[in-house]
Length: 315
Image (cartoon, rainbow, N blue to C red; front, side, top):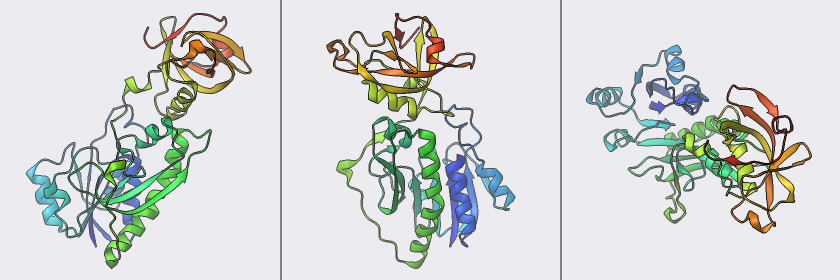
């Protein structure tokens, strides 16, 4: 088959590599220009560089809304478009143009976690598994019929970084298998159960701000979901922003006001957490390591020299 690829960052890079290795002919690659957005500087293997090294024509676009791009796609006469981590909407005159339409590769177990940053949101929400879905693109965001889906478990100490590496390794095999099924006419397309759909927005700085009214287990997952190299979960202490590098749910139960710097427990400093913390029946968040604004990383027991005071959402 003649294939066009739309993609970006490491997800798109892995997809393009799988297409190049598949024996199908990659006739055009469309990718975004390099971005300075905090989340787009992470996992930023260049799709453009890989395509150029292989002699595949490359077009750079922020949005696929110009006539020149459409004419280039038409001239390439693709049998299939494959997309992964294309950051803006593709119009139907593009995704429906090839005989086999457009295969989108999405890093969640659709219909749940459509949209953006699915691994981070899934980890925050305590999901037991994550994965990758190959589906046919239609006019609705990540809602097309599914041809393949693969999952991996989420462990109790996994970070978003762990889950990234585990799921990105699924991309090559799922792309290869999906293309073989489509080319052979053996693909079975299964409609998604829209009653189970959920849609998530892009991550931003605000989404890493700690709300001490959250229960400790949710805060502990937030810290793991914002593991390096992602922008860490953060709070403020005495007017200064600090990032939480690692934390655990406390063994003891601590009552009081959410955000109170309370007591040392093992190698951590317990912060009172949860909207119902006044009951004294909830665990707190035991912070283990912090990072200051100048990049210095410290054990929490070294940073919090005295107990008392509060961690706050804002200075």
